[in-house]
View 1 (cartoon, one colour):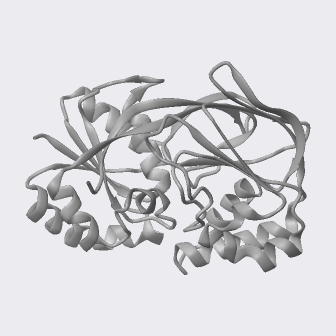
View 2 (cartoon, one colour):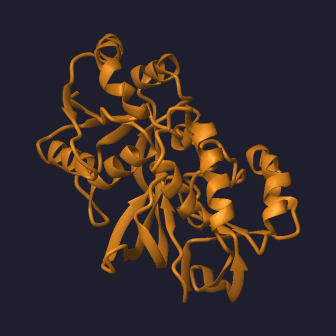
Length: 311
């Protein structure tokens, strides 16, 4: 099997570059020989994966964080058309958050992911197809595999990505959340959620954050969508409504435990199409990165990619 390993050397606060010889040797022992390519700029993983698949690569392994994973997923497609449908994607988690790998049950340690890669069991996973506005005002199309959110989540990403991330994922995102909390004001957003021809929600509401979840975790381990399934053909849309800052501070632990859905100002709707607009700037969080702002449209692509994951 022809394998390409795409490495983000700057992931894990730059430690991946130093540890790559050790990781490389461990990978060779578990999966055999492979080609390797290093990312050089933001978005480069998409090009490397796309070129690899076009040249006949059957297995891609991504060494990096949630943002690099997102780029790799986008490399499997020309817009929404798969380049090599039989190819599949595996992960060596080396990022700040590691939320996708947590959703998949892979874990964050090298010793936990290597046996999974060696076994090679794959599962079909849904993807989200998104249209939104870039910071330059251009219309952008992207895919995501885990969670896209907007509201305070986009501002948290901005704060986290401006920091060193040296304290690790959970702490970095917690500090980023606190910084964003005091700068953010809840936004009035018009939201539409539908499933097929049925409109489930169509109203304007004030939100703190809204997560369109394919996976379960975001923000460095927040269990925002405990009932989401990555292969059920639906988004779990988690609406954190007009929540006061003090409630977020005193009840923050509930989102890590996944018990926040019972709170009064939290609502969950399940559908396959989401639209949102706002008269103010609202930043987007997509798989741990901050690529743009509302307006946004999201559609599910059922069973669109195969991922290496535990059986």
